[in-house]
Length: 176
Image 1: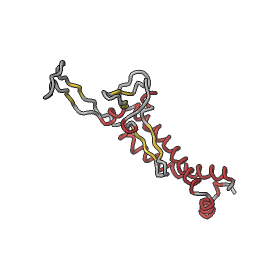
Image 2: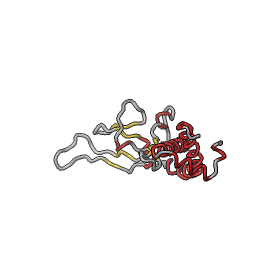
Image 3: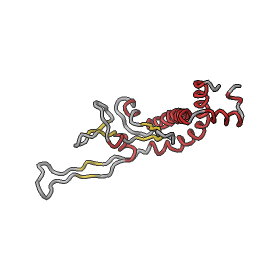
Image 4: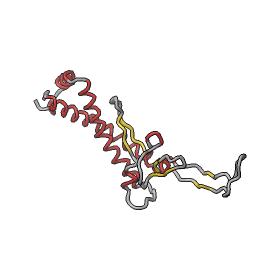
């Protein structure tokens, strides 16, 4: 029988024959496909956000990442670094702070930064240089603007992708 012609009864029987591991892998496959679509939407909003980028957007596009939850509970799109640290060298979209921690500039472009000024002296010692204004970065909010479109896309496509993923696993295991 063609999987497209399955009714509720055959579909339920197919799901019952699959092991929990096979079901979890098909669910994760569906989430990966939808996360890929959501990444495309987020990157499109990044390009149209007005953020002034020198060169091309390839390095900036890498700053938007997806994370599929390991227990099959969904996925997350983020511009934040993993644990606020990121190892690697030579990436243009990374900033190294005083402690050597690399953080993506996209994280600050999304949320913006507050107005700050360095101090000129402290209780214990006097600095040689005077305090200065470090400025602020405005919040571009490209992920926030992309969220409604991403939710709509996931709602429309997840059931279709889940059906495709279950059929692939079922074919691979010989159920179809």
